[in-house]
Image (cartoon, rainbow, N blue to C red; front, side):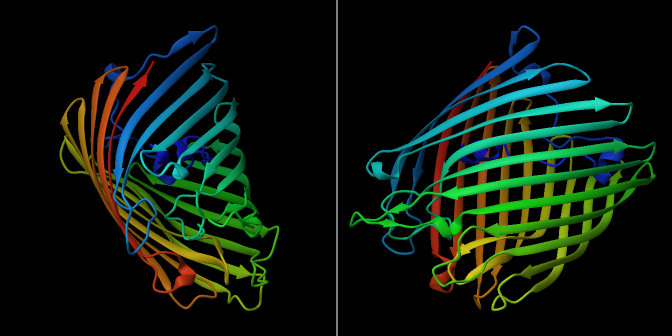
Length: 413
C-alpha cells in the first residue's frame, strides 16, 4: 500500500514509446480491461470524482531492517485518496490527493503519516499533437531499509519533495516524437537520536533536473525503431560531512526496437551508453552500458509474464559517495484464475555500484500476491514479500533479511 501511495503522483513521461506505434493484439493479465469491475465514480458537474479508502494489516519480521537481533511487529495501515478529473476530449485536468498512515502495535515511534497532493493539465491540439503539465507535493518518511537512513535514529526521517513535469508529444503517420522536462526538489528534516540530539540531514537536500527527447519510427506493423537521449543534472545544496562535492551530470544515448509478435509477445529492447560525470575529482567518472528492456509474454489466455531490466544513475545520499550506477532486473508472472481473481508472483534483483566506495550493494526480492475483485467497489488483496540485502561494507548501509505479510481491502466509488 505504501508503494502504491508513493507512485500515485509520480511524474511520468508522455507516451511515445516505440511499441505504442504498433497495434495492440493482446493484453497482459493485469492490463486486461474489466469494465464490469471498474468503479463508476461520482459525477460532480462536468467532473468525475473517484474516491478510495484502503484498510490493511501486516506483520513485519524485521521492522528496523537489521542484520542481527531482528524486531517484529504488527502494523495497521489506513489510507484515503481521491481523483477529480474532467472528461473533455481536447482539454483534460485532474486534481489528486492521497494520505496514508502506518500504526505499529508495540513500537509506536515508527508510526508515520504520509500524504501527497497534485494536479495535471493536458491539451490536444491539431490532430496529432498534445501537451501535458503536472506537479505534485509530497510529505514522506524514509523507510528503515533505505541505505541512507540513520541507523541510530529513533524514528523515521521526514522529507518533502516537489515534482514538476512538462511535455510535448507529436505523432506522425508512422512516427512519434516526445520531449519532456522534469524537476524534483527534495528537502530532508533532521533525524532525532536516542540521546535527544538531532542529526543534520541537510546534506541530502538536492535539486534534480532531467530532459528527455525520444523519437520512434514504425518500420512495419510488427516493428518500430526508437532513439532516445537523456540528460540529468543533480545538484546538492550542501556538501557531505566528508566535504565531498556530489553534484553530477549523467547523460544517456540509446537506441532499440519495439515489437509485437502476433499475440504472443510485445515489448521493447533498448541499449546504449550511460555517462556519469562527477563534479568532485575524487569521485571517478563512469561510463556504462545503458539498458532499458520491457518484454511481455502472453503464455496462454490466462497467464502472462513480464521481464523488465534497466540501468540508470542515481543520487547516493551516503557520506563518501556522490552517486551510483544501478542495475535492476525483475520477472513477474500473472495468472487469471478467475475473471475477478488474479494471482501474481515476482522476483527482482537490484545492484548499486557507488562511486567512491569499492564495493557493491545487492538486493534480492521475491513476492506473491492474490487480488480478488469482489465487485466494482471492493477489492481484497493478500501478499507476502521477502527481501534480502547484502551491503559488504558499513558505508553502504545495512545488510538484512526481511519478510512482510500483508492483507487489506480497498473501497472504491
